[in-house]
Every structure is written in C-alpha cells, then in structure tokens.
Amino acid sequence: MITIPVDGPGGSTVYDARTLPSNDNVNSYSFCIDLDGEWFTAAGAMIAYYGNVDFSGVAAFASRAAWVASRFSSPLYTQDWVVASGQGKLVIGDRGNDINSYDLEVGNLTIKAKNLLAFETGLELKQSIVPGFLTLIGTGKFLASSVGPVIFVEPPFRADPDALLGWADCPSPSVHYDHNWMAQSFMAGIQGMFGRESGEERQYDFTGAGTILMQSSELLRADSALLRLIESQTNLLDANSAGTLGHKLIARSQQQ
Amino acid sequence: MATLTADKKVLHADLSGDSVRAAQGAMVAYTGAISFKHAGMGGGGGFRAAVRQRVAGESITLMECQGQGRVYLAKDALDVTVVVLDNDKLTVESEHILAVTDGLKLDVQFAGLRGMTSGQGLATTSVTGSGQCAIMSDGPLIPLAVAPGMPLVVDPDAYVASTGQMQMSLVSGVTWRSLVGEGGGEPFSLRFEGQGTVYIQPAER
Image (spheres, chains in turn orange, blue):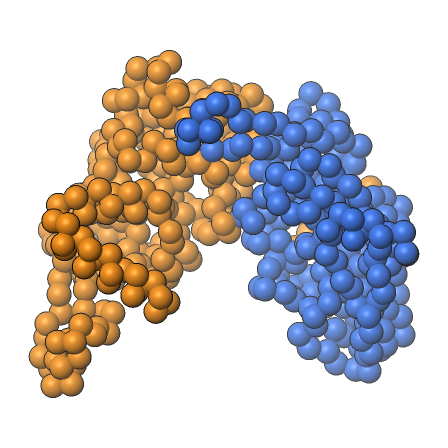
C-alpha cells in the first residue's frame, strides 16, 4: 500500500469522484467544476475528469445548440474555446498559475483573454474594445488564472498594461502617456525623441467607480487571438505603411 | 537508513553512512561528509535497462549520494512530494524523479502510444520495492483515486505518476474538425480503469 505523508491540510488526501470539491479549488492552482450540463472552457485547460464529459469545438457545438451563438459572440476566439458537456467532475489547471473563481450577478467584467479559463453558460462572452481582453456579461461563475494572488484596487488608478488582469463595473480604461516623466529630465526627452522608452510611460488610466484586478507579475504570454486581431487591424494601413511596420517588427524580433 | 523529507520545494535527504540516488545536478547544498558519484547507466536497472532506455529515448541520469549528513535536493523550484512504497510499484514519468532510497529498484517501461502523444519519449520509469521515492511536480501533486466503475481521464501533459492495478488507454478526441483547427482542444487523453491512484500536477508541461 502506498501512503503519502501528510504535508498540510487537504494537500495530500486522495480525491475521487465523490470527494473532489464541488465548484471549488482543489488547491491554489487547480479548480474542480461539478459539471452537470455545459461549461465553456479554454482549449487545453482540462487536466483530469471523472464521469461522462464530452469536449467539442464551439462552432461544432453551436450547430447542435442554437443558444451557443448568442452566448459566445467572439468569433475570433472560437478556435481557442471548447464546450464541455455532460456529467462529472472536471479538474481545471493552467500551467501552475493561481486559479480563482468569481461570481457575477447581473454584472460585467472584462478580463485578459489568456487568463480566462472557463465560464458558465449563464454568462455572455464579448470581445472588449481593448485588444486581448474579453468581457463577460450576465450572471454566473467563471474561472481565471493569475500569476500570484489577485490584487483588487479601486479607481482612480493607473495600471501597467502587462500586470493588468481585468476590471469590473468601471468604464474601459484610456491609455495614459506619462509625458511628465520625459519632460522632467533632458536626457529622457532626448531618448524619447529617438523612440527609446523606459517601458513604464504607457499606462492604463481607470476612472469612475468599480474594481480593477491586478496580478503580481508582468509576464507576457503569447495570445494567438490577439495576434489575429492586430493582424486584421493592419488592414487599415496602406501598403507603404504596412511595409514600414513589417520592417520595424522584424528589427524588434531580431533584437530579442 | 536514509530518510527523505519534503520541505515544500526542497528535499532533505538525511544520510547515516548509507546512500540515496538522486537526479544528477539536483544537489543545492549539503552538510557533513558526503560524496557524489555517477550511479551508472540505466538508473540502476542494469545493462538491459540501459539499452531499453536508449531505445526509448528515456533520459534519467542519477547520481549516488553517500556518506554522513544532510543533502538538500531541488530542481527548477518544483514542488516535492515523498511517496512511501511498501513492496509496491509506482510508475513515474522519469523527469519527475528527484531521489530514491536504497531499497527501490528503477526500471524503464514502455508506455507505447502515450509517450508519443505527449512528446516525452516512449517510456516511463517504474519504481519497485520498499523505500521512499521523492517526485517533483509543477504545483502541488493531486492524487486521484481510480476504482471499478469510476474511471478517470487525465491530460497526458498533467500526468505525473500512478500506482495500482490499472489499465491505461488512449482516448483520441481527434476528428476531421481538428484538422481544420476546430478541435475539442484535448486531442489525446489518458483513460485509467481498474483500482489505483493517479497523481497529476496542476500544470501542463
């Protein structure tokens, strides 16, 4: 018989289909969904499940169930999302990042697309005006990952775009450019003329009433949907400008 | 008798004249008089295991830590769990083995298709005997029970280890839709049936 020494409370109990928590965290880094019906989950977020669970692509599922189209109105993201349907216990994980569940009640919350892992079908998903962010509207539960614990702050507040996780109930942010910082020192001004930045001039400015969610890391993660979005926006450029942008991007990728 | 104690992300190996085998390069500090040497091919499974290991592309290189004192072992800030085996067998993804005590034998085992899908080589390591085995995981290990009538499906990338009498089969979610980029997101999963425990980590490799 194999035994695991007890390291901490709950940390070492052997779970089964009955003892796994119901719609609660297994530990800080994983969450167990008590599935009875449908949930939208990010592709690849499942790490284990008990019971009869079927995963199908959003578009494939929508052809069988008309309500999906009214809930999932972000065509750009259909490739990255699946519908988990059936009965069972579904364990969700995301590269060892912290996972938290949030409840929305007739509310709206915007969150970084890469950090959203799953949401109940009572919520409606829309693309945010801010690239790389998704907005959830309605009533229901959703799961989101963060690097380190989530920090809640209230506006007025300026956030580093990389560390920003999302915001609820307040107007979408505007971009704040810290020109004071540049004007303060002559050298910084010169650097600015040459396009050099400290990397902290660009911030998101939040006003009004609501809550802002921050994570304790500025880790950037590849988001294939964001790439597609920006690529489609380059259609606004004429051929010449597009070429210039291309050269700049090549130079940037060679620098890194 | 050497004892292994997990302290979150560090393993303490207390030696009193005996030895433990640990993943090469995992020593971060030690006290006392301890010597480190290469533990030979095949992770101690002998020449035949070494050959199989080559064929399977399994990479596990162990060192032998011998002497008197305490060795601190850690790797990539991964969580450490000590599993106690009493005349039993534990199947572990080789890259997750941090250390084993003397009474345990390591051997390479073919896992067939599963290794191909997760891109981790074609084999896993089986640990048999009595003693302690320290395994590493990205985030705390989650033990999930498998019983008759209660099969379990896991993501191959989250799978770390398993024990018990179980049949493992590959579930394919690949359809024609996957080819046009509209798949179920979980192209391959592992299905466990029988009686036993599966250990997973809350992260995909």
